[in-house]
Image (cartoon, rainbow, N blue to C red; front, side, top):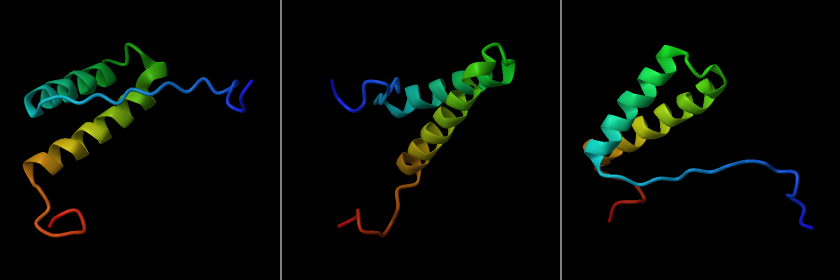
Length: 69
């Protein structure tokens, strides 16, 4: 038995094209606004943040920084 046997954390790291990312962001936003799944609101909020940040990086790539050559 490992040390993380009591850890029930689930991860979902999904990659998709920009257009699908925008569509998913709209869907997640609508789900959150509907409050149909209140126990998932924190998850939706996190998804919105991750998607928004990722979409912004694709649409407005940084012009300088350690990740640019």
